[in-house]
Image 1: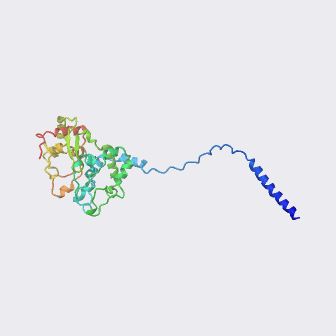
Image 2: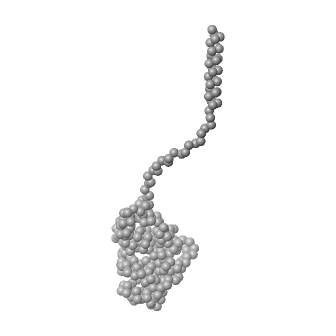
Image 3: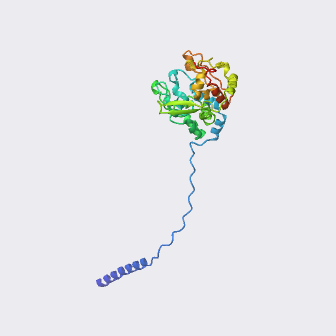
Length: 309
């Protein structure tokens, strides 16, 4: 009986092994891979933080580039900022032109020889004129507003970093500054040639071809109509900033400032007024052309007609 059971068990095991091997051996080759399934739906695109919105465009269209030019000159004086919060000795740290220059070229332009001090900031490395042309209005707005940037607290906070203009200027005023940088600002190469040597802040600069393509006789006509009333027939009626500077000196030595103020004017110069200077009132903007400016620049090279101080 035990022998039969043993034989039966052997037979059963052998049968299972046979069928396992047999059926395993009958498996054919895998078929070709089927076509890929349909791709899933893309997710919703995120919002571009630099995108120009309809509201941005509307604010920009309503902005005034001439106001922006005066803001670029001196934001604090433009808005008559509180002198306790912003003492006269340190207002240069808030003037766009102090870091970027009247020419918007920073340390690679007229500021190449402007040494920073405790009351004057380090010049920017950026060519602001070129940068503004290659960035959209939203990017420029955000850069000017500079939320989280340097704020005014104590004298130790004054440095060369960008101020938080969002706490100083309104959004509308910032859009004015955007308009100036994007559209209104001059390419100074159209007014004069500037040669520089060395490196900031000990470099040197030389102006030439001041008033490129200008006509001095035509410039005198414009000057007599627009400027003579305040500056006098020979430009000596105003001692600019009470610093021993006549208009002739500026035509020959500061054409970078002339190209800006001749057309866009300037806010009241409170710092010099507070120090007792009577020749620092606001200068109005003028309805003149770039060619008029070039013409007057040529006119101003005449040291007899427009003497220095």
